[in-house]
Length: 131
Image 1 (cartoon, rainbow, N blue to C red):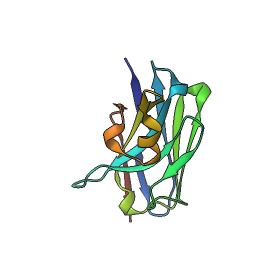
Image 2: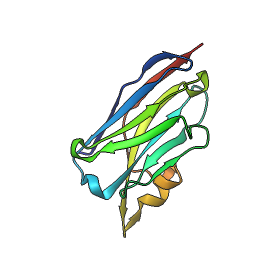
Image 3: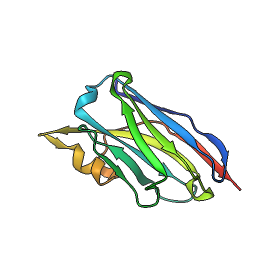
C-alpha cells in the first residue's frame, strides 16, 4: 500500500516560516515525482510546488521566491520550506506523487502542477497564518 504522510503544519504569524514534510513508503521512490498542493477553505485545490525525479523543481507563481521544495531520497521524504507567510497561504497542504516512466508522464503533471495526473495522495496537514 502506497503511503504519503504529511506533517509539520500548524499556526504561525504573518511573516513567519514553517517547514512541511511528506514521508513516503511502499513504492519505488526514484520512479515517481512528488508535488505539494493546497486547498484553502471554500476554494479549489491548487498546485504549490513539485520536485521531479531528476531533482528539477517547479513552483506556482504565488509562492515563488518564498517557498522551497526539496527532498531527502535516503529518507524518502519531500520537504516544503515556507517563509514570509501571509494569511493567503492558509490552507490544508497535501502531497501527492505520480509515476515518471515511459508508460506514464508523471513528470508532465508534476512540472505543471496538474492535480488530475497525480496518483496517490496524503491526507493533508493544516497551515494557518494569522495576522
